[in-house]
Length: 191
Ligand SMILES: Cc1cc2nc3c(=O)[nH]c(=O)nc-3n(C[C@H](O)[C@H](O)[C@H](O)COP(=O)(O)O)c2cc1C
Image 1: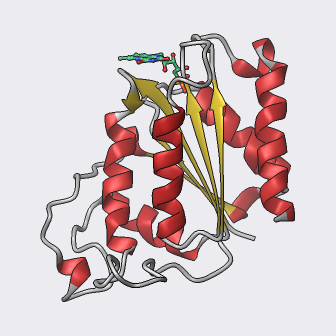
Image 2: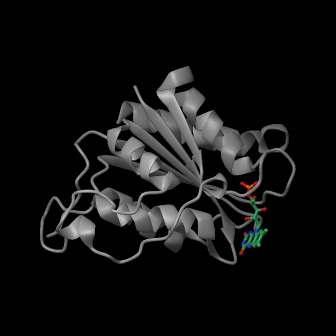
């Protein structure tokens, strides 16, 4: 089994990162099976709209630290994407990853019933961390990103909102959220 974790949090000991670890454990992956990419630590550009991935090549033409992350996502069985909410949206770091995943669409993705380049059978977990205690307020964003990743070809997508968080460790303060993430990860295993 191979698992790729992509984190959009700039915080070194982020709750996003801690919840990603919870999901990895629940899936049962260990050691070298897990690759982690913290976008904040990478030299990564946003999409340059060169459209190479829609004609000349089958991958993103930009060569930077995200190149390895994108190829790892292509080869992974599970992708766990975690991001805090900043000003009502995913972080700028996380959005770079989302936009670069555009390269995973086939050239005729607008009309092709199987628009993504991903091989079948892959599973995807999206975790939002947020300060606001209302877990419903960014549901629209969550569903929109889940729809996008589903269109890229993930067979199963799950989303979890970890609401009402501050700097304190989610592991110590919010066993309910840890359980929520564990349950979502396990449902991916079974699906
Ligand atoms: C610049 C900034 C903007 C934020 N904007 C929001 C927001 O719009 N809504 C919200 O619920 N929380 C907001 N927060 C709080 C974070 O989402 C919250 O602290 C989150 O748990 C951080 O996740 P992390 O521990 O994974 O880094 C913001 C935090 C920062 C630093």
